[in-house]
Image 1 (cartoon, rainbow, N blue to C red):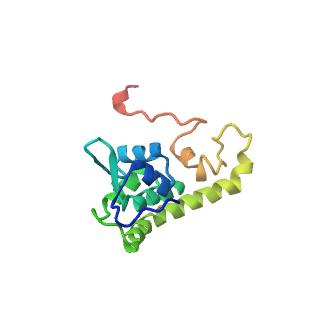
Image 2: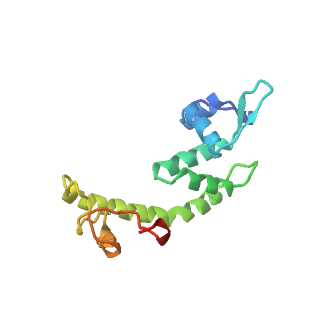
Image 3: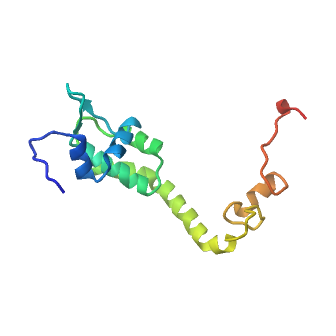
Length: 157
């Protein structure tokens, strides 16, 4: 991994890519989505502050566990500007996601445990289907093999 001298406070997109392991196109995407920021030089080249390395690492880790980009952006908005986030900053953000990740793990375990029951089923609407219809939640709302949009009075008869 290329080393960046301590006296360099800003990184080019190539340096940030090399150090973070993220493709240049991914960094441009992150910037377009408001996950990271840069300033432009007089030659219109991007320059990133060193703390962007940690932000990119955070984004990539959060993406790996399935956190949506909008949620990641909200979390990054809570971080301090103009300084590298501390371990405590990151711990506070990760605590907020713990319940969501625990629920996701529960769902994935359920999927894994029942996947063989559904392979080849094709209908995904059986009363007993624990994947698409846990606890027959759809059956309590309406009968039938498909979920149709519920009509309101203003939709007509």
